[in-house]
Length: 117
Image 1 (cartoon, rainbow, N blue to C red):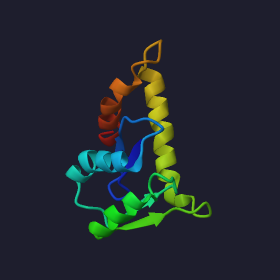
Image 2: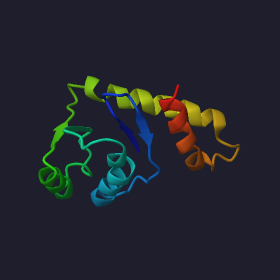
Image 3: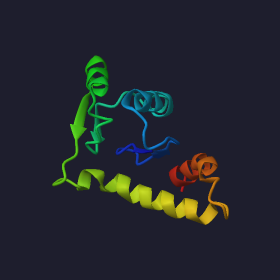
Image 4: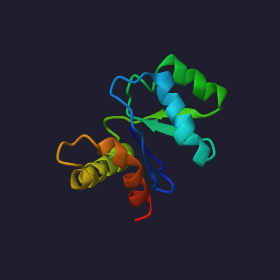
């Protein structure tokens, strides 16, 4: 999962799986993103059901923040994340081993390299 701070352009690469559920995404956000920044006033989502679940709506309401949904007609909102996804893929393709089974171990180093380049 890639999360991007749109203001300072820092990206966070978080190891997860494609079937993760919203409460676990919220925990990943809390433990990986929230600790580094103050609470976001708004978050852009790609309309993934994980992010629009009742859990997220309740969480954002309790934290007095708003969920801003990106629209297919407003792709510029999500272009930055897509661009960073491409960079991450390129970075991992360079350093992953022959069996391609160590990419998860490279995420922290890739995040550091991206954010400090």
